Image 1 (cartoon, one colour):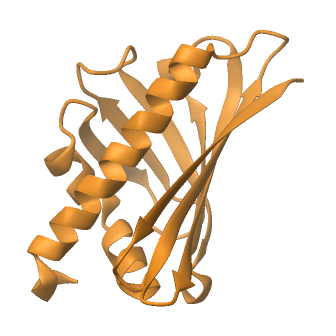
Image 2: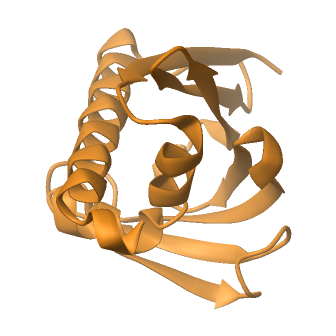
Length: 157
């Protein structure tokens, strides 16, 4: 099995705990800040903790319609969150799964949002460089939108 990965790293002027808290509301915020990519995100099993299964319904800006994922790990004290897409056309017919590892790292005067995305291929076929670049751009744009949403709604976070 082959794998390929992308890294997203976005600095923030906000502290790590605030960034993680806002990002933890991804299901509600992402469709508001990037509706062309995220139509909806619904919990279909669980209560948000490890083992919870959710379904993404994607918008017109991406070439797929849906993806189902499972929450693998949440560590609020270390500002980390991991989940795995395991079903849906977001796997592009060539992937077994897509692992997402998110970590918000405290820095002097702010934080760094880091996301590693690992595409686990069924065989030797891998997502194209164009797809990987587009995905990276989507993640960066969505993170920046979520950060701006949190800044605009400080009482909520």
